[in-house]
Amino acid sequence: MNMLMKPNPNNAKIIIREVKIGDERGIARAHAAGWKAAYRGIFPDEILDGMSEEKGGPRFREAIEKRLSDDNAPPFLLAEIDGGIAGFASSVTPPQQAADIYDCEIKAIYVDPRFHRLGIGKKLVSETAKRFFDQGKRAMLIMTADGNPYRAFYEKLGGKPVEGLGSITVGGKEVPLIGFGWKDIRSLF
Image 1 (cartoon, helix red, strand yellow):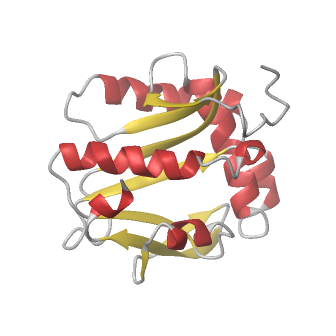
Image 2 (cartoon, one colour):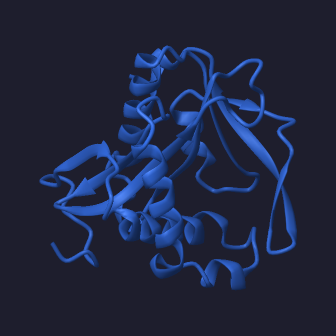
């Protein structure tokens, strides 16, 4: 499939699977596109414009290798459409914040904007929640920079706002973090 074209949602086949070696460039591409869409106007343009699959690929390869070397690692899933990577969700346990309430966290979830509104993000969240549940986890957190225009996505999935999570600094600009929590992840699948 030509990855510059958005698939027809009526016949797009979406596959959610664990990452593997060789996925790193596609994940980096989705990450860069997702960050540019979510954080333009929030973080400096020079940082966003400098993101690419070439620069991000090695970092994601390292993350994939780490995930594959640990049978108990939290989920690291990607979404494929017609063989191309459209998005991903990587996770951590325990969460970096609010660990007294939440026992797992989707650390990063990004869908290439060309593939928005096909249900990919929802499928990634749902499958991640299922895998966390199978690992004995029950309450999940997702954090994002305040001002992210896609926060409505988390709210639509039933995430309750969680405040007091600190901030993130990118390119010298500090932005508060906002979280969305599910105290019972079964509501996501």
